[in-house]
Length: 329
Image (tube, rainbow, N blue to C red; front, side):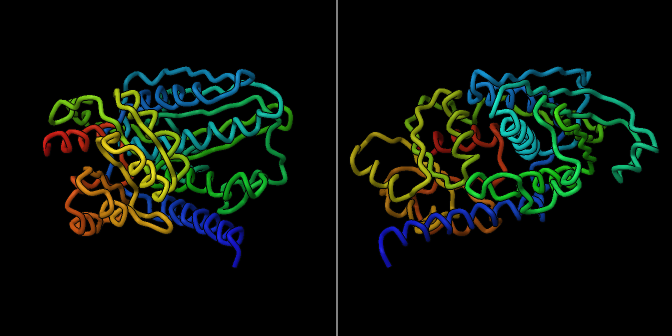
């Protein structure tokens, strides 16, 4: 087997790992992170991330009219839904130019409309993601939520994005509609039930212990996480180096001793998992990230793993984990 063959096998393995993670996202959506949530905050964060990555030919805007009502939701999962839908709109527009609009409003869903989505009548927050792209052909619109269905080249995705969206929305007892006209664009509408619960009282983004600016190595083979989490860490005031390859991460540390204060690494990665990497890091503190419920037990194998961050996690969870690292020092 040649080096080129091994590279192809490794790429296939990484792709397979990502596929499995996405299958788990829509087959067994986690309920762990559910809380009364103001969706306007999620929308603002997604708009900010998209604004930083879209070309100048594509604009994104938002209109929020939700009145401050809350939904029982996992903000990390809803963030993933919106990022998937906005990314789909970008793919539809990138050949030319156009506008993506994200709208948030509250409405009463009556019996007739509720029946079309198999949800209960009542008050809902609706999220609409619209673009003025070429639209979806009538012949395939009924298939777009099927796992592995895609009109993109195989190198651009697995075809799981909209299946994940569908699974997450259903896991939130919500409804989903799509309307599209060739040449007129596409509108995805998500309906999530309003909750009467009061908002969960976080302590804001302040960690248990004040965290000074850190130099962080972030290791993650999931492309969405690799793109978004370093930005969030940088917004918190930290310096971040990101890689999808644990071996490359170890090489970076070896070539620049004392450069990194902390390593945040995923557990499930090809070639070398997060615990194996932590064992090679000596005294450098590690935050282990995992979607596995047995992650706490696995973390005991390496004394420098300070805490475990269970996926899916949000900005508050990340900040709290950093606070636990600071408290240990």
